[in-house]
Image (cartoon, rainbow, N blue to C red; front, side, top):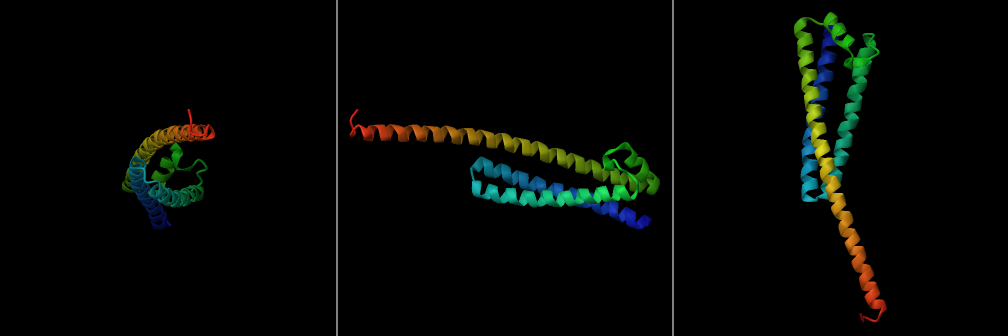
Length: 153
């Protein structure tokens, strides 16, 4: 039981960190696509990101299941989690898990910050695109007006 529990904790933490690292790479690629205007690649990356997010949700379900098995309704975010884990693991195991979760939190924060930056860039690109479309629309109206008058001003 103890070995299985430690293995499960380690597997969940490792999986979650790997997924956040994968997401970090995708967000950097997303940034490059937005900057270069490569919307086709951007759509592909967004699909890949959704796959990673789906796998993250399954890992979260694993955390929830594990917390349920040890009688923690609040999940791993609550203070009781650490007390319960400390009771179930030796000190080195608890410290190792805390270290892994800190790495996960830091990576997640970095990914979120980068994602927010990408969103800002996308907003700028959308504004520019709207401006260009408005200019094109005005130009088309002017051409139609010019043509309607027999090409005379």
